[in-house]
Length: 241
Image (tube, rainbow, N blue to C red; front, side):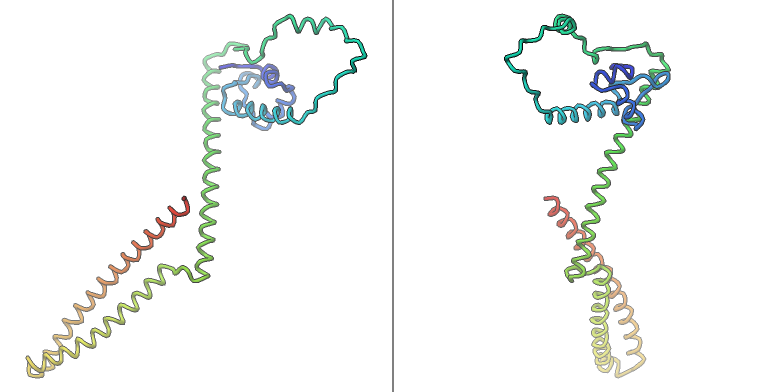
């Protein structure tokens, strides 16, 4: 863990303090301490800033052309005192500077809380990107379904149920007519053609028929739902593959 001043952090990143202040103003770099002058190098926002900055610096370095060498005819310039000093004296990496000032318990707690908040923020940003991607995929699927419906390749479930209901009622209506004819024959044979008995028989038959119609409609609805769910699962597996 390293707590640096703005100047030290800018030096470790090979940028000016003014350049750093611009990104602090854009909330791309987290600061804390008295006057917001300290920077925690382990803060998630600061880690991301350093990685992105190094990436841009590398890309910029690749595009710089090498400067031409001086003609050999000219004598080599004598090294200056500053050059000799830089070659002899060991350079100190600014990034190795640790704790420019001692933190109080309250400052440490505030800094750790800010790290947690920034980490949660970056987590929400990632979740938002994932959610946007899923939303775009669902919109594409919906558009594809609309196209297939217009082409007649798909039929709404509600329409399927209406067609099934009409067919079921038509079948049972025909069956009811046949039952009435059969009941009339049995009434003539077994009850001597007593129409009172025939009416009682038809009431019982219609009650049973109505119950069967409701049972068949419920069963058909469940079967349609099962087929739709199975088709949706197969479609999802095919799209993921």
